[in-house]
Structure formats: C-alpha cells, structure tokens
Amino acid sequence: MTVPTLMQNHQKKTYVAQAHKFYNEMQQALSMFLTDNNAVGINETKLNNSDFDVSVTPFVKNYFKVVQDCGDTPQPCFADEYKSLNGTVIAAGRGQTFKCFSIASGASFCMGSFSGNADTGEGYIYVDTNGRKGPNIGCRDYWRMFYFSDATVDGWKLTPACKKNGANCPNGGSLEAQRQYDWDEGCARGDDDIDGIGYLIGNGWEMDW
Image (cartoon, rainbow, N blue to C red; front, top):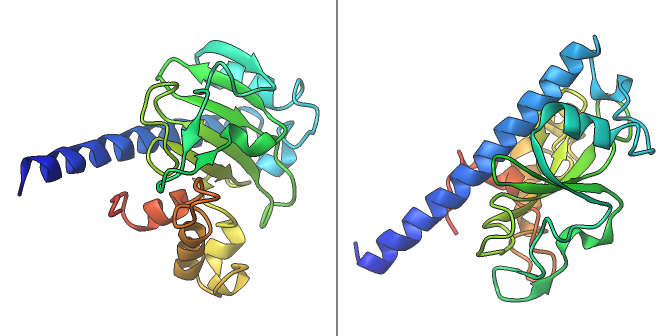
C-alpha cells in the first residue's frame, strides 16, 4: 500500500474511533439515566419534555463533564463552517431547536428532547466528535445521531420497533435497508451530508468511503 493510502486509512480509523467513543458515552449516559429514574423507557422520563431547562440541560450536566455550555446555538462549541464529502457547505445543526455543549472527552454536541412512544419515538443529536478541530466534514467528524426510548443510539428511524421487525422500518422493509437509506439520504448526498451513522454501525464500524 502507498503512503497516502496508509495515511487515509489511519485518518478514517481515527474518525471512527472518535464517533464510537461518543456513541458509547451517550448510550452509557442514557442507560444510567433510565436506571436512576426507575424508568423502562426514555419516553417515561423528563427527557420527554419540550422545555429544555427541564429535560436536556439537566440530563447533559448530570451525566457529562461539561466544559462549555453554548446554549441554544452551535457556536462557539462547533466550528464556523462544515462541508459535505463533496465539498458543499452545510449548516451545523440545520437550524434545529436544541441545547449545545462541549464536553471533557473533546466532543461537542447539540441535543433535542425526546418525542414519541417507546417503539418509534426518538430524539436527535448533532455531534462534532472532536469539537472545533478539523476536518469538520459530514460523515467524517460531524454526524447526526438519534437516541431512542430503550437508551440506544443509532441512525435515522432505526427505532426499537425497526430493530425488532424490519417490516416496521419506514424505508425498505428491513433493518439492513433502513441502514442503507440512512446512508443514501445522508452521507451519499452532497446537500445533506450528516446522516449515515446507522450505516457505519451496521457496517461494523468500518468507514469504507
């Protein structure tokens, strides 16, 4: 293998390790939150409250070591500019409603509250896995993840219901097809290059792009 190829492979492994680290941190925090609240699902907790001062902010500050609270805007926790894999400029957070933080592990994330039921409900998370540091590219160090009532973190519409029975997945009728859809509508598109974490998870945390 050539030196440039080896360097690219090393970079990809670094991006994956950073994404996997935040994924594990968030799943662990959500699981602890369920236990501490004697709840079966996130839908039964205060995270299911549109008032972020009641839901998101207390959750993050109780289960993460916050080094910067950026309130309801991505900056300055996030970089000023992000690009897709093909170089198109994309907006950090897409203008969603959330609370944003930088944490001690080096990641920055914006988080929305949970909405829906135990089977199909979800909450979204925009994360830059290494904070303001580069490359600031969607599907490299910048992702949109979702959290579900069972305290799992995954891609778009990869809900507990979808994982139990592929027929409940909204696109394609199978878990694998839903993961592919997550990639097709996210990383594979230059204008919306954030989704794709579901594909990465299903691909065994191997970045083959």
